Image 1 (cartoon, rainbow, N blue to C red):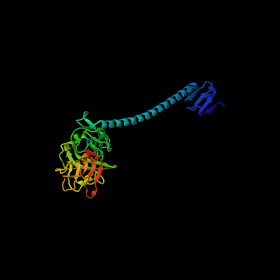
Image 2: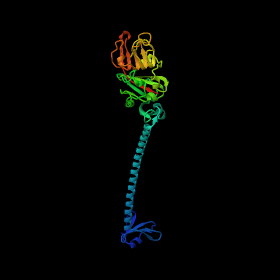
Image 3: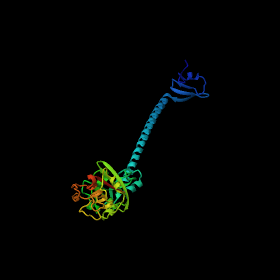
Image 4: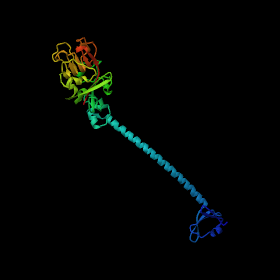
Length: 345
């Protein structure tokens, strides 16, 4: 056999055999004697490459292919790392924004909510010029409470009715001294507190809450003042005229004697006929007579101290926030101490 076709290539022993091949332009031939590949031109056979050159090219081509695969793998890894980096950058940006918000000093919880509408309940820095660092850490409630619509409520005080800290005669109602400011960062728990917002925070609304046996109720009062201190500290009575039914809604099962309609701030008997009639810093009174001069019942914040409970056989126990009612018609006396919460906006 003069030639052997292999994969479209005419394999011949030598030049004599190659010259006998058909004169077909573009035909490939491989000579065994010199291990060289030829391509048929119009007139002549043209040498293309030696076998060792082909093998060398194949080796280079394989190496190049391996490098290309390595580069593609590196590119894929880089793309993955870039995607992961973008996620981390996004997370860091979110954290930075959160830290920026946390470190901002606002004039009130409402101003914070007006700045960033989706803020959550929590502790925010509220401007307090009288404090050394210029701000107080204050719990802010950013959504509506049952009875107090809207958000942006700034905490002022928390009062435990079973304690004497904030009884009617306490100096905390008339001074500019904080009490347990850490308790002003913990929301609706049983820690008492008085914050600098008592004398620094102007408001148009008050939100009052009472918790008795885990039942928490709120009422709101429209009242404008430069601060709660300016409403209470001078001891003058200021009326809110919201009606006793609204006050009574603060505590389930509460009650008052049927007479006396005094309510508001610094509520006390105008012409007392007994030594220690009931009085309350924020709330309303009741009396069995047709006046307010010998009141034996109240619901509110800042009631009288236990040692002043000397009429109607009142027990000598502390109830400075909640509901107290004795000499009730039919003997339905009330003793319901509460955990009280005072917010403004």
